[in-house]
Length: 114
Image (cartoon, rainbow, N blue to C red):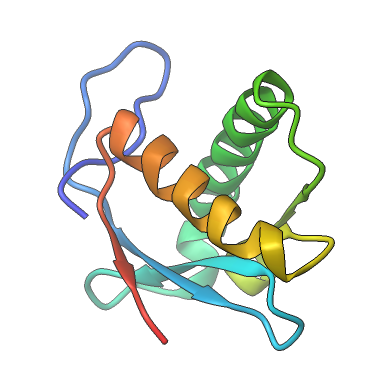
């Protein structure tokens, strides 16, 4: 990931997390956060990770409302992920494209796995 999410109007800086887009066993879209470099400890960064995940979840909720999407945004910072839960297989491609577009507009890169 080339840039991190901005906080309180500060310019983006190098992120300590990489984003991976995959899918859940049920076929929903999953955004997984992986450490970019070895962390001092998981607990040393869990608040920063939670802030990033909740910020991104809120942004995705706003954008989902604008496109009248029926999927659900499910942030899980304790599992280092954010899921977009889709109702059926038709929505999976739409949800993944939506997520990739939103990340690009925020200046974030994600690796698509799977």
